[in-house]
Length: 198
Length: 198
Image (cartoon, rainbow over all chains, first blue to last red; front, side, top):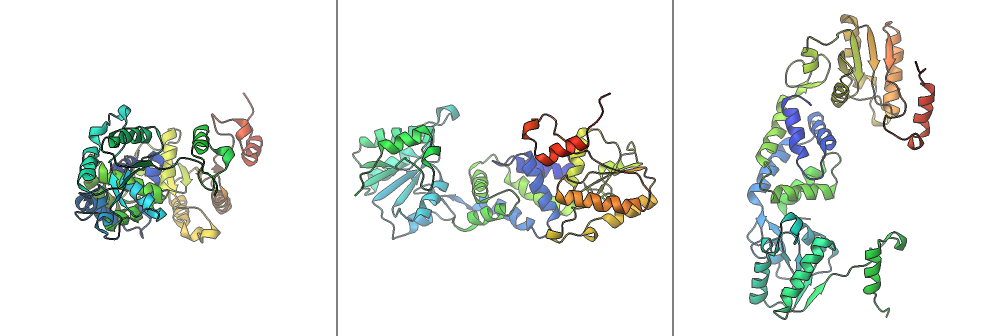
């Protein structure tokens, strides 16, 4: 243990996700020893982000305004709605430049182990949007893991009641990967979802 | 890219050692979404650490006072001096509870590639301490890598001129490890430094 505030700062960094005690120590010493590191800026940004950043009142994405940059963009196709778990998923999809519709951020996935049920996600807001907006297709883009699949299954069932076309992102082999290193489930999915070559 | 200050905070976290863009994003969203995380405290500690923490005027360890807790402790054996590269090495050695002497923190290791020569380390201060303090043994505890070994070799040669007994920490197999997984150099060192069983 270090003395006083050095240890306090190590402890605070250690509370952040993915930072263990060793990394926290390394970061703290970097801050102590690297005079060029702008500690003031990081310090101010931390408080500013917490104060100013909020969630888009329409889709739940992060923004500093009432609506996020996607919802504000008049060039987006408002008839396509992509449902994701987290704001970071919006960014991941935006990077592909393939999707030109709008998003709906659930704020997580159904996970009974963590005590997260459908009511803890913004599913009621999703149903409201589907009732009031003119949406022709809902693309479910939750994570391809247990919680994401459970959430996708729940949503699919729910959306059948209002007769809107629903699709799910394809599962299969990651591009650039080796077939022999794919796990059985992924390889199985790749067979199930095989596409005819044209 | 996110909008405005969210991306700014991601960028700032990304400048810290060991934090890539993905981790920086994860940490930023954790701070945004976890209301229980005390952003104010982290923010204040960052500035406080930079303002209050300095290096012990005697040994170079971190402290909030003029002298560090080791140098201030009257129970330490002032005839033993352990030379380390960084303040974090002091902590690592303190955790063993095996060493009761004092430290001297060099502030790095000799590394021509990084442009760090003997004059960039606190070697002059070390020689001053050896001249003014009653030291019976210098234990060189620099890292067992290229830079650390070069620094140890340089110090050994230099200290020969003032006739103080010098030792170097043993290299060999890490305790709890498997012999078959040890690299050739470490295994070679373990043979060189083998100890008679009593």
